[in-house]
Image (cartoon, rainbow, N blue to C red; front, top):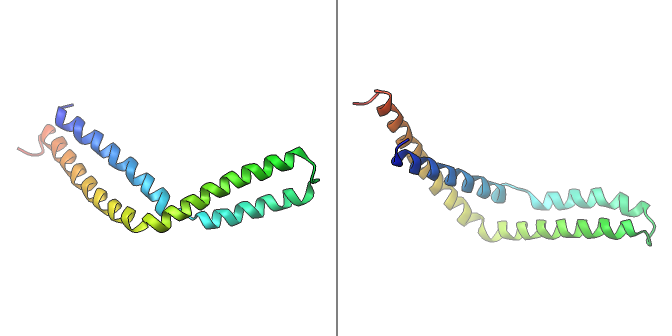
Length: 113
C-alpha cells in the first residue's frame, strides 16, 4: 500500500467515525428515551417499599441516565444545524476520498493508463 493510499484510507476511517458520531447526536430521540425510561422505572418504584435500599439504587441509576439524555436533547437543540452542515461537508469529502481510492485501485489493476 502506498503512502497516498494509506493516508486516504485513514482519512476515510476518521470521516466515517465522525459521521457516526454526528448521526448518533442528530438522529437520536432523547426525549422519547426519557419517557420510556420513566415508564420502565415507575412500576418498579411503585412496587417497592420506601426504605428498600434497592429503590435508591434504581432511582439513582435512572436519574443519571435521564440527566445524560436531557444533556443530549439540549445539545441537539443548540448544535443540530451546525452538525448537519458539518455532516454534509464531510460526506462530500468522503465521496471525494472514496473516488480517489477507487481510481488508485483501478490504476493498480491496469484499469487506467
